[in-house]
Image (cartoon, rainbow over all chains, first blue to last red; front, side):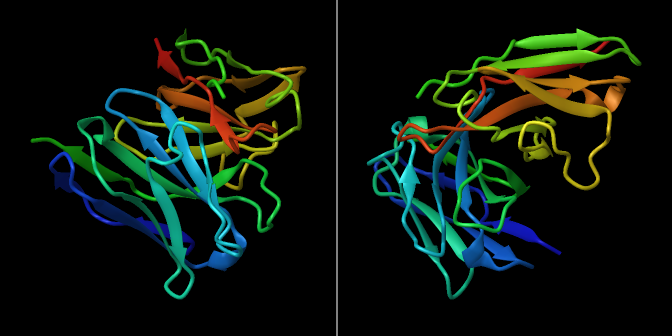
Length: 123
Length: 111
């Protein structure tokens, strides 16, 4: 079974660092794009960035460039997104998703999603 | 890169058909046929229901169909059912620095 399993909910204070994970299984991890999506409470979906694990070159949405770091560990089929200094405005649900096509050519379709990681940042 | 524009809400009675529009620009929706649609029920992860404008993944009901004309893509749900009540998001490849962009989202209510 193809699946993405994300790490558990986090409660952090402003200024703290955080790294959340997304482990893929049941497919060739390095051949499918991985994306990260933010959903703030009661709001819509926003792409944070995407990465093709085969070249580990992240592509960030402008709003998230410099705010987060996306990475992968090919040896464990795991993708990560990390923050160096959290803000209250980072409070949101975060989803990872896998591309539908097995290709380095990006076609903007994601067929398998993680269950989501809720991040709460509060003093 | 701004979000693609969708109506905030659409409603219909059981059995009816509804259509949700997704309007972008020649840099995204109009550039390629790389538009996908997602259904999201409250508290759940999004689910892919259409890709490449009109292709359905395995297991997705044929009551969902898609089309595109110029810079606007559309999702049609026919034979509306109670279980279709959810939020729907379009998504498009972009030729700008942003790799991909979502629509603003549409809440579908089954009356």
